[in-house]
Image (cartoon, rainbow, N blue to C red; front, top):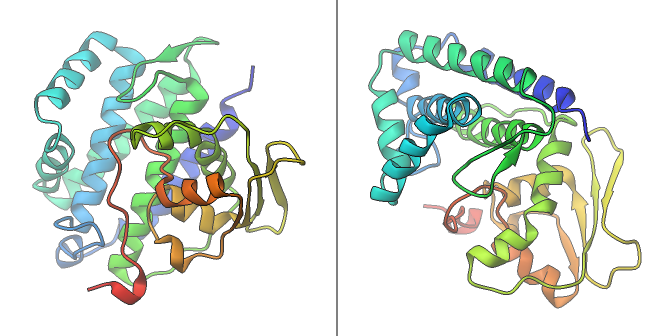
Length: 264
């Protein structure tokens, strides 16, 4: 069984890097609009704090988490925005403190989780490593939204390996959430890491293939960039279809981002 410690460490590092980006913001900067319609920088951090809290409940108090799921089912189109809105209304210092405390509590809970444990979530149940990976994916993706609002370019790191692996593993989920039957055959995925290392997944002789920068693949599966703006290449009809619908996050299909040429 894989040791979850490396991904938990990378989650903490990703959170800390984002923390440095927002720690000294002015009240006006917290109110800057991000690429997510209706969401400010404060909404992005509030969303991370809210989902960290939900993840902590899933790990430590599954009855309480079940009640959160019931709330989500009662308002499927609003519960994510409502959670972000509630947190964004806090003064920035309080929101920052809440996010910091919650993510630290979650990291501690993940580090001490029993070996082989599985936790409920809004999608399929997750292992400790999978939960940490999902939180890393969200922290990185929403951190990009914050950076865009601030006009900052973040340097990608090989922490993306966890997000890339999640993107590959959620291939069948992406097809299923769109009401499509997943392909039977595995794909070959070859991604160039920020460090220059080659990350490979799937059989070498697979008919359907995806190749390109790992950063671009992670932007695609988190729906932070449109496919036409990325340097990803495919071979095979099924692989080509996948890149149109890929998502590494739980929930209904996302709307994604428009091509840069069509951005308003």
